[in-house]
Amino acid sequence: MLERITNPEEVRTWSGAVPIEHVYTVGVAGEVFFRAIKDRGRLVACVCPDCGTDYLPPRLYCERCFAKTADYRDLEARGTVHTFTVAHFDLDGRRLATPELYAFVRINGSGGGIVHRLGEVAASDVYIGMEVEAVFLPPARRTGSILDIAYFKPVV
Amino acid sequence: MPERVAIVGVGHSDIRSITPGVSYKELMFEAATRAYEDAGVNPRRDVDSFISVSEDFWEGTSIFDEYVPDQLGGALRPVHTVTGDGIQALGCAAMLIRTGRARIVAVEGHSKHSDMRTPYHIQEFAFDPIFNRPLGAHPHYLAGLEMNRYLFETGTTREQCAMVVRKNRSCAISNPRAVYGARLSVEDVLASPPAFYPLTELDIARPADGCFVMVVAAESVAGDLAGEPVWIAGYGWCTETPSLESREWGEAVYARLAAQQAYRMAGITDPFRDLDFAEVDDSFSYKELQHLEALRVCRPGEAADMLEDGVTGPDGDFPVNVSGGSLGVGHLLEATGLHRVYEVVLQLRGQAGSSQLAGVERGLAQSWRNLPTTTGCVIILEKG
Image (cartoon, rainbow over all chains, first blue to last red; front, side):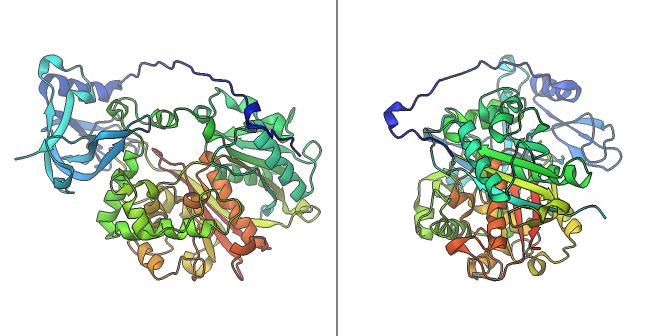
C-alpha cells in the first residue's frame, strides 16, 4: 500500500509560517460597551424586548429570538465568581512560574458576565460565589479594551 | 420513505503520537486504501462523491479543500470539505444519498497534530478576538472553568473524574489503535502535576496523528458490496453559542440538542434502554460524565454514580468508551468523531477483538469540536 521510510535520519521536513494580522471591528454594541469602560469605568448591559434575555456584554440582536435589543444601561463592575480555574501553562505550553487565576464573573444586575483574571487573592481563597469587583487601569491609560480592566479582586 | 444508508467500509492509518515518516496525504491514502478494500469498491469507478473534514489552521494551509481529492481517489470528481467534525460529514453523506444525488460516498478525517509547532496559539486564535483573546491564556483554561462549574452543579468529584481516566486508559490497553493505554490509579491522576484546576495533566487527552476513511452507501447497492453494512439510524448536530459570556458552563447543551435530533430520527425514547453502548467525547475527563448526562443516558449528576457502580465499564450494562476514548487512543482533531464511529462499527460487526462486547445491536457515537466550541454531534448506528 505504502512504501515507508526506514531510516529516521532520512526524514525531511519543511518549515512554514505566515504573519496573520487583522483589525477586528467592535460594532455598534461593542462601541457602547468599550466607551463605557474607557470613559466611565462602568459596564453596559442590554435586554431583548421579546424574550427578556439580558446581555452583558451588550449585543445588537438577541441570539435566542433574533429581535433587536434595547434598554442599554450602565452597571457597576461588580459580580460573583460563577466559576474559576488556576492555569499552570502559558500559550506556548510552558509551565508558568506563577500560576494565573481566571474566572467567569457574573455581573450583578445582568444576565451576562466577563471572563477575566482574578488578582489580590490567593488561589486557595477563591470560591464559587465569591463577590468581586473590577480593578480598572487609571483613566489616562485606558484604550477602550477588555484589558482596561486589569483584573477582578475580592470585595472587602 | 427515503432509502436507508449504511457504512459499508472502514479503514484507518496507523495511529501514532507522531508520524514523521509519512505526509498527511500518505496517511489519508493509507486509510482510504483500507476502507475501499473493506467495502470492495474502486474509488475511481464506484464512489460518486467525497467529503473531507478539515480546518485550515490545523493544516497550515489556506483553502485546504484543494489538497484533498487526489489521495482519496477523488480527482476530477465531486469533493467538498466540511469544516467540522467527521460525524457532520457522515450526516452530509447520508443526505447526499437520501436525496438521490449519490449512491456511494467516501468520508475522510485526519489529524497531523505533530506537524503543528504552535497548536495552542492556533486554538486560542479560535477565541473571540475582542472579549477573550486579549487575555492571552492557554486555551485549556476554559476547560478548567467548565469542569469547576460542572463539579459544583452536580456534586461530582475530582476523584470520580480521575476514575474516567483510569477506565479509559485501561480499556486502551486492549485496543491496537490506542496510543496511550496504561494502568493508572485514581491517585496517579490526582497526583499528576496540576494543569488547569481542577484538571491535572492526566485529566487531559493527549494528541495523536492518524486518519479514518469510511465508505457510505445506499441500501440498494450495499448488498452488492464486500463490507458488512452497519446502518445509520439517526444523526444530529448543533452549535450552542460562541459567546463565553452567554453560554452554559455546567451543562453540555449542544450534546443534549444534537442527541434529541438523532433520537427522534432513530425512534429512541429511552437512551439507556434503547442503546447497548456508546463512544462519547472524553477529551477532558469530566467531559465523558457531562456528555452522558446531556445524552440523557442518566439524569444530571448521575453519570459519576454509574461509573462508580461499573455500569459504564467494559463489563457493565452500558459500556462507554470501551475503545479507550480520546484519553486512551489520543485526540485526533476533526477525525475524532470518525474514530468513535469506527469503534462503534467494529463492535456492531463483531470485529473488536479482545475489546468485543457481547450481543450489541445498537450503539451511539458523540463528538465535540473541542475548545472553545459548543458544537456537538451524535450518530446512532445499528446492525442489519
